Length: 50
Image (tube, rainbow, N blue to C red):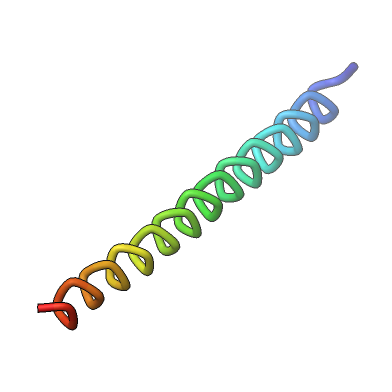
């Protein structure tokens, strides 16, 4: 392989890893959002019960 092929494959690898990282971050953000929604609902239920 010549140097151009190495650079091309390295670029592809970088973009794949970046895509996976962004997918993980998006999934974590969705989970945190769900938890925040549930916590807010619990807090509202406690306040309305008092």
